[in-house]
Image 1 (cartoon, rainbow, N blue to C red):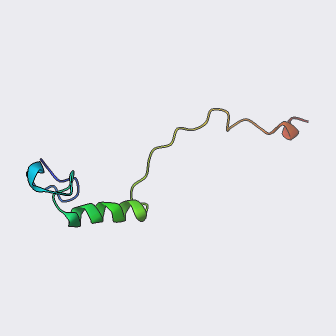
Image 2: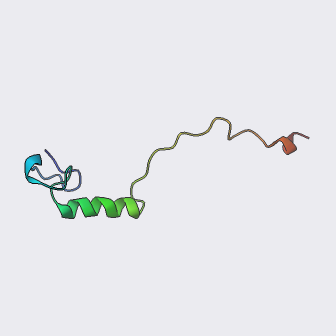
Image 3: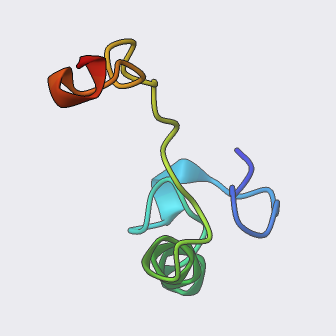
Length: 57
């Protein structure tokens, strides 16, 4: 199995930090999430582009 952070090949049975090869890679990944290096895709709201009712006057 390859570690998603460092791409090293490792045995999943020998690591307590699955899906990472080590605790270090696990913490690097967490840091990337906390620094907003990663993000989840958003789906635009189809109704969000409608004008507020007061604009239709």
